[in-house]
Image 1 (cartoon, rainbow, N blue to C red):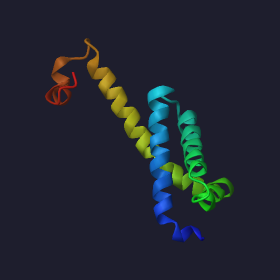
Image 2: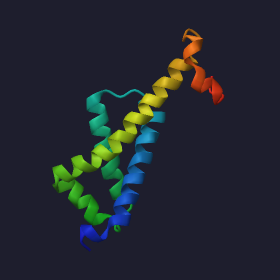
Image 3: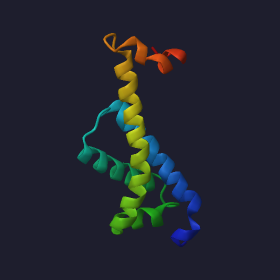
Image 4: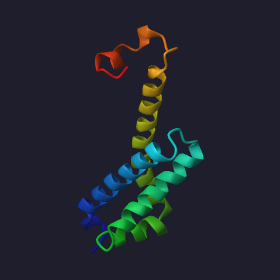
Length: 113
């Protein structure tokens, strides 16, 4: 099957990669460096495509041989990674008792302080 006929599986691979990134953030590295971010998003994509094989074998093969395709897919996952990291940082910072109370408004409103 050609890659163009695999839109649903591409979505599944992206969703799985995002979940892999979330697990990585929670259990291994909450505040990654830029090189770690690039590496972990690529690994997350490759692992996600490999995990659903044989349905995603064509996608996995393309990720391995086409660096431009891998980079384009990585950007989608990386954006989510960056947002999750920023939210983790914000929640951690606002939970600090030394953080000025006046700036905790949105988190206090939703019961996160």
